[in-house]
Length: 160
Image (cartoon, rainbow, N blue to C red; front, side):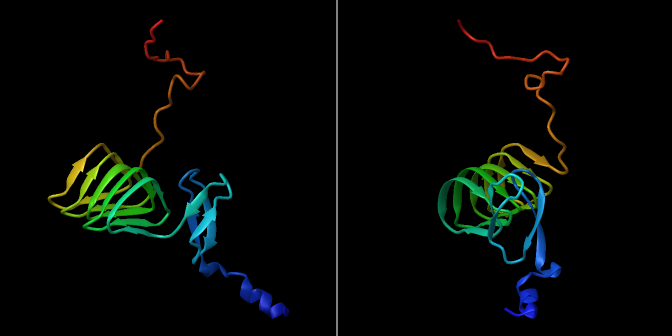
């Protein structure tokens, strides 16, 4: 291998993108054509490709740093969707967490909680759940989990 050939193998900075891990929120730089990787910080697998659903799908988890598109005739039932963006034209059932915008078409139906920075809803869409939209701060600390808290922890009653 010639020294000039080595420069061709190493990606140049313009050919790289920054990806934020869905699990640990740590950014990392990867090649533009990367489809999947393992996070350097938390060692969990990440998919970077966009996903498109055109028919009925029942999955436990849908996770990608790309955009998830649910087409008009699609019906997706899942426990959790974590994505970089979401476009819904069909039906979705499950908890949705998006790092990007969530676009809901006029004939779409979402049953479940949605957390996203922005939400655009077409007239006639059916939404059922709790919605947390905008720049979200970390949730309030749980007094039962924090031993330094001065508030008394609330526990559920137990039977003897």
